[in-house]
Image 1: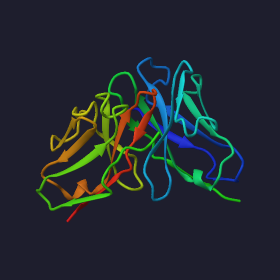
Image 2 (image 1 turned 135 degrees about the vertical axis):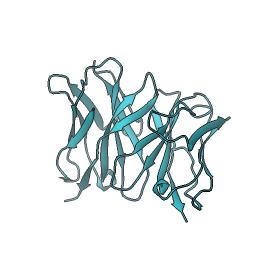
Image 3 (image 1 turned 30 degrees about the vertical axis):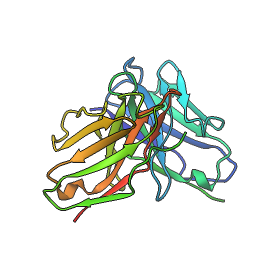
Image 4 (image 1 turned 90 degrees about the horizontal axis):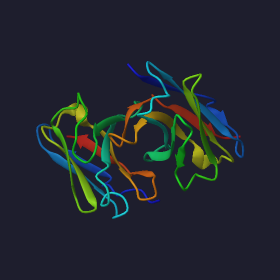
Length: 121
Length: 110
């Protein structure tokens, strides 16, 4: 059974770079059928798509975050990673990684449990 | 890109039916049959309930159904149960090759 697990620092200082990793277990991140996405939820607010990556490295980003976001994939570790630069308090959120069936179901079908990241000095 | 528009809250009694709307534009909801719906219990991972406007993933109850008319998609839950109390989000593909969520709807089972 495929599982996703987010990991990374729970506290980041303003202006620094937020870095998170999503580890895929029970399946291969290199499958040609899937993209891998990142979604976040600020406290008291709704879900926001951050971006998605294909195992080959092809990426798509939310235009509102594009200048600060980098998503990458490490097939040898079965992981993908999110980096968000120049963070502010507005980037405080629960960050989820998810399997993105971009080409087939056009939906996010398996999600990690999420990890809370707080931006504060 | 702007979030899709959902009502902030809806409510219903056990056994009743409710419908949650999700309004976008011709560049997202109206332009593609790639609308999905998610149920989110706070503190847990969101769960896919509907994809491609009206299709149910394996294991999702047939009490959940989806539809679309023009720029508005809808999620209907029939036979409301206590476990349905959660936040619900729609999501759509856009003409910019991006994805956008709705603002979310809190469902209260009275």
